[in-house]
Length: 405
Image (cartoon, rainbow, N blue to C red; front, side, top):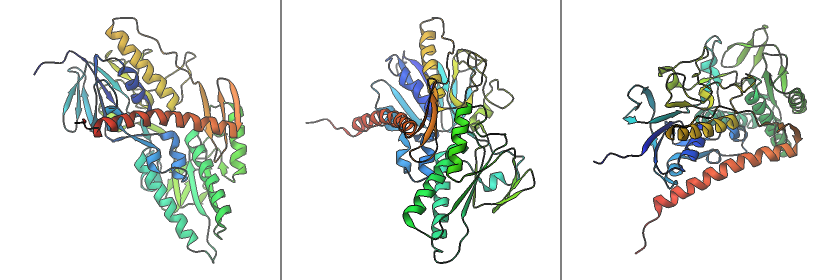
C-alpha cells in the first residue's frame, strides 16, 4: 500500500473547540484529518437550559458527527471511539480499539462536572448537566416528578423543590430557565400544585463571582422576580435522597439537586503524561501548544487560558472556538516553518439567559438586557447550529446519493 504524503492531524473531542479547529484545517487538501470522540454527536451545551425546561428536544441540541465530517470535500474521518491514552514519543493516539498515528495532535476533550468528594452523598444524589445523557436523565426525572405532583390535584401537595449548588453562569441560567418555565406552565394550566421551589446556593457574597457589577445586579433582580431563593455565603455540606445540609447547619428539603459548583477535565486527561496545573488542567504556552510537546495543541475547557492582563478567561463556547481557530492557524504556520501566533484571545462578550424572552449581557462593551439581549443570544446559537446542520446535511447527501444511470 502506498504511503500517504498528507499531513496527518488527529483531533480528540468534538466540542466547540475541536470542531472549530476542524473547520479551519479542512480547508487545506494536504491534511488528512481524523476526529475522535466517544460520543456520536456534538452537544450544544449553550442550549442545555432550554432542553431541561422543555423548550427543545434532544435532537435540537446535538449534531451527528459522522455526517458532519463526511460533508467536507477534503479527507475527514470520524471515529466513534474512546481515547485511552496517547504515546507522545511515537505520535500515536491509543483508543479502545486501535492506534492512530499523527503528525499534529489537537486535544479538545472539554470538561465535566466536578463532583467534590468532600460533599457526602453528592455523587449518589446530585445531578450534573454538562453531558447530554446527564441532562436527559435529569429532564426525565423532573418531568415524571412534575406529573406525579399534578396527579395529586384535588388535594394539597408540597411544591416540587429543586436545589442548585453553584451560582456561576450555569447555575444562574438553570435557575432562571426552570423558574420561568414553571411560572408559564402553572399559569397556563391552572393546576392546584402550582409551585416550583428553586433555591440557588452561592458560596460567595454575590452570584456570578468575577463578572461585571451590572450583570450581577441585573441577574439578581430578575431571579428575585422569578421567585428564585438565593442563599449567599453558604456551601453544601452533605446530601441525602431528600435533604441538603448546608455548612451553616440549615437543612433544606429537596426533590432534586443540580450541582454546578465546578468543573474538571474529562477523564482521559488524567492518563496523559503531560504537564498539568494544580487543578488538573493541561498546561499550555502562549501559542496553545502543550508545554511538553510542540506538535500537540490543547484547546477548550481542558486547559486554562489567560488574557494579556493575566486574567483567567472563562470556559465559554466563545473562548473555546477562538482557541480552536488559533490552534489551526498555528499548525499551518508550523507546516510552513513560520513564526507562530501568540494568543490574543479575549472575551468578546457575554450573554446570560435569564428565562423565557429575557437575558442580560455585555457585548463589545455595550450593555444589553431584556428581549433584545435574549434575541441576540438566540440568534448566535441558531447561527452556530445552522452551519453545523448545513454541513451535516451535505454529509447525508454524500452518503445516500447514488449515481444516476
